[in-house]
Length: 300
View 1 (cartoon, one colour):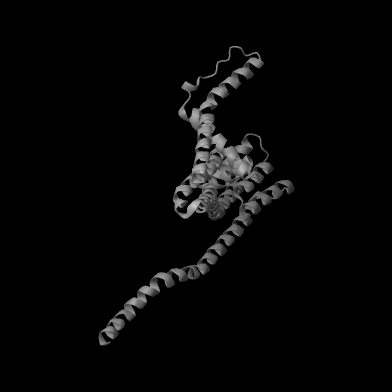
View 2 (spheres, rainbow, N blue to C red; view 1 turned 180 degrees about the horizontal axis):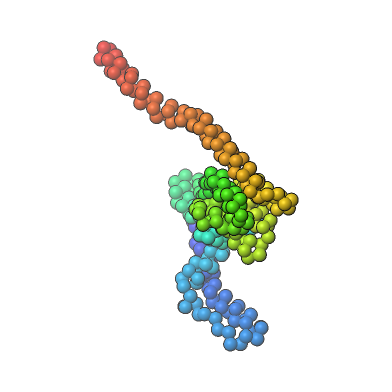
């Protein structure tokens, strides 16, 4: 059974390699055919030999792996992956296609490692271990990106009160909201400044302030930012002073940050209990009772 499974995997690998190798030539042929359809007879496509290795092999392979990942989990779409990467601050470093390809690749690597490792437990054990490692490998990039998104949200939550103070001062000094955001991006660094810079860029290319702020809240996914964006949108609609709104928002987020810090401090003793019981108490008992046990052993 293992031999049949190995032969099946080998056949699949050969098929995938053939598809990857012949992909550039087929793409070139299709491009020339489309060009001739529109009367572009002089169109000349770049030969596969002139393309880089990443363009000839890696990019097509990544696209195929991404499609495999989408078939495995149909509920996931490229748009949802793009939003997750934006939330984690990885949209400039990682494309949705590359992320989905990584999920499929890690799943395949996990399955290939599981087969030989589980061979000692019999055919069923090998298949079970391969399945477990494949699922774990498929989920690993998602766990990693979720961890980065969580840390980034915490960073934005801690930076928000100071950013709102700076916005309030700028607005009270006579700047408009767009100018205040521009001033903030000049004087602050970090994840929140990057998000404000992206929002400012969207407004400068013609996006309405309301839509840009809604996208900002969707990317960050924190209650504090959601409250801030809704308050700014309502202030625009009702004609309320932005300076006063920003001051109230800054005070509110600062109180929430203080409450979150106090909550973490209250949880610290409980989290320290398990390391204390597992590591400190055994050593302490050994130091205290060790001499007594040695003395009792000598007497007996």
